[in-house]
Image 1 (cartoon, rainbow, N blue to C red):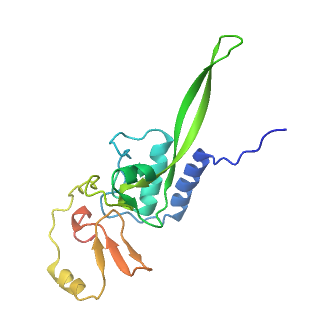
Image 2: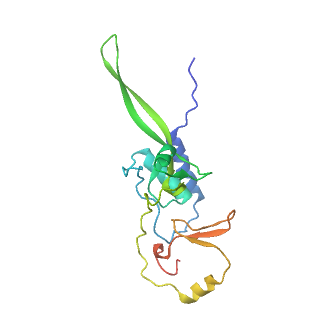
Image 3: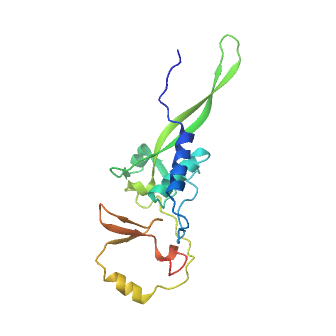
Length: 190
């Protein structure tokens, strides 16, 4: 009788994430600002590879992370950080081979394996004291702000948070999140 396993197919999970993001897209909308995913990095600055890159890119885009750095829960604690309560981690995998020697035939045999880990983006970790700063936005917008619009928006009674790579309204905490002015392609896009 074959042993049933309760394993998650990481390739299918990443494919499902990408398809969901494509299906949720509202063409012909174009993001009018720069920023977003760069090559995902481990806590020590080493770049992730393979399927982990796609998985971490999808998670960063979906959750609006600006930082390219990712840490396990334990790594965050060891560095003096604390994963924010309610943060959702992202699954990555470590692939390798275990080489075993057959005691009867003296032949070596490679057994491939995958080990799953959960990592958190540095944007989800408090107390890292600038150890993992978000990359500075590439300034593509040399224009200046429209003074009349700035005055009008300053009169609106709303909390506006500047930073990150997504623009949205947070209903639960009642604030507007916007990328920095410099990240937009033009003043009109802002």
